[in-house]
Image 1 (cartoon, rainbow, N blue to C red):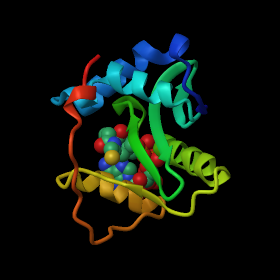
Image 2: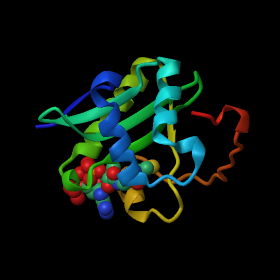
Image 3: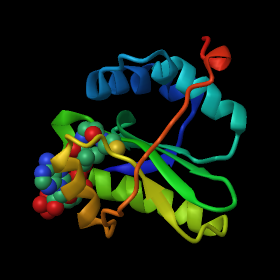
Length: 144
Ligand SMILES: CC(C)(COP(=O)(O)OP(=O)(O)OC[C@H]1O[C@@H](n2cnc3c(N)ncnc32)[C@H](O)[C@@H]1OP(=O)(O)O)[C@@H](O)C(=O)NCCC(=O)NCCS
């Protein structure tokens, strides 16, 4: 039985850091789990969720809404809990929260080599759009 609930820093921080390190294997400072968590909590938008099984963190999703688009980030399920519908539950939960805030369209990015993740998102109704994704780091804010 999986429950999706709001992230609690007191209860879930260490488990989320371990999950993200295991699943994403970060190489870039701006994605360091502890820093990413702190930055998300500072926004206090209530769009950070964890999936729990027997009170253990088995998955995460971050969402964001800027008044124009909703975004999904850090959709992750622990390898030992995959293909049981946890990922779908996380995405549906985040979509519902974004919908309640008035969001009209949800976007997400996946690294281009991740074909299985593309199949996952297609299974929950997302399609590939012809876009070129660009980004720029703000180095002065990348400190933990
Ligand atoms: C992508 C991810 C979140 C999916 O989580 P999950 O809990 O295993 O997904 P679900 O069980 O809800 O899968 C739902 C459907 O998605 C599709 N799907 C999921 N994983 C898939 C895979 N590896 N290959 C092909 N299709 C897949 C299937 O259609 C699946 O339904 P089915 O199991 O009945 O066939 C998980 O594999 C993961 O954490 N991957 C690494 C992290 C990552 O890359 N996240 C995305 C960042 S943008």
